[in-house]
Length: 101
Image (tube, rainbow, N blue to C red; front, side, top):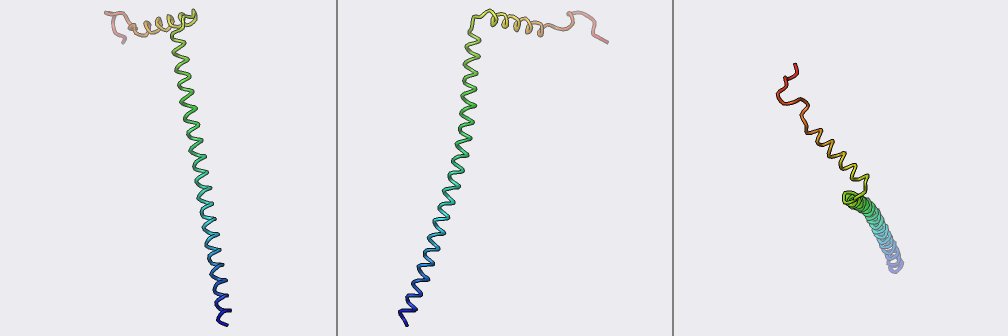
């Protein structure tokens, strides 16, 4: 009878250890799933930032090439910009004129 009780105790011990092991595996699986989700999220953020950085650098190099260009349209646009800036700097009234009432 003592061996029967001992065997019953071992059966419950192995079942308890099995449940603990299964819970640990489930917990580890959940942690790995959370890690994978965070890794995907951070990778998505990194891809977005890298694409914005590359787009800005491409825009910067394109504007630099356009500024260095000797195309007639670019030269005309530069002259028009210079003339409009000169008009903006001019006062609205001539010096010495009466102030508006």
